[in-house]
Length: 304
Image 1: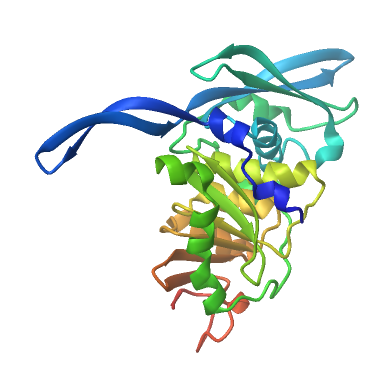
Image 2: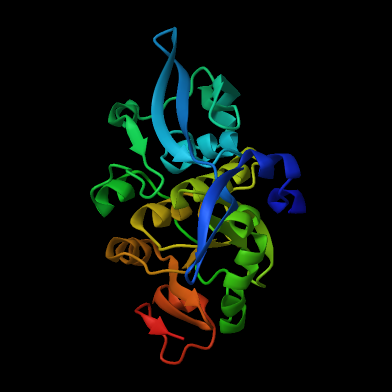
C-alpha cells in the first residue's frame, strides 16, 4: 500500500489548523500568545440518483468535521451505512457549495450514483445528523445490522502477538499530524499484523476519522480489508464496530473502553475487539482466537 495514504501535505495541514489568541497561566503567571486549534466545520453530504427516470439530489447527512479528505468521508459514510456496495456504484463525486469559515473551505460533497444502482430508500428518510462527539446512526438493535447482510469475517486472520499490540498506540501518535500541533483530534489507523502503519486519518469526530479511512480504501478499490487492524484513539462504540465490520476488518483495537453493545456486536460477528490498548496493557473482549499465547483463551474477555 502506498505511503502517500498517511503523509500529511503541508497545504492540507494548513486547511485544518487556525491560530487563536489565548491567555496561558503557568502557576500564578499569566501571559498571552497564539495557540493552534483544530478547525471544525459542517460538511453536508448529498446523494444524486435516478428515480423513475428523474434525476434527484437529496441531502442525507450533516456532520461536524475537520476539513480535508472530504470526498473520502462522504464515500466512507455511504459505504459504512450500506447505501453503496463499492466504488463501482458511483458515477461521479463533486466538492461543491460556497466557500466559508476561517479557511474558505467548500462544505458540500455530492456523490452521484450510476443509473440503475438501487439502494434502500428508507435509509434516506432518516435524515442523518452526526455531531462531532457522537454519531447518530439510527440503528437500535443488533438484529437490524444483521438483516443488512453484513459480511462474515475470516477465521483466525490476522494473528497478532501481544508485543505488536503494545506498540500500536505509539505508532498512532507518531502519525497524528494535526494532533501534534493542537492536541484536539481523534485518529483512526489501519495496521497490519506486524504492526506496520498503512494509513491514518484524523478528525474532530472519531466516526468521521474511521469513515475517511475506510472511504480512502473504497476509492482505491482495496476492500475487503481482511488482513487489517483498525486502531482508534478513543473508545470503541457500537458505531465504530459496525463500520469496521462493513469493511470486513477482523480486529478493532481502541485506546479507550468499549461499550457493551460494541462487545455484543463483535461477539456476534466473530470480530476481535481490544480495549484499553495503552501503557503496555490491553483487554481482549471478543475474538481472542486471533491473539497468540493467551493461556486458557476463549472468546470471552482476557486481560494482557
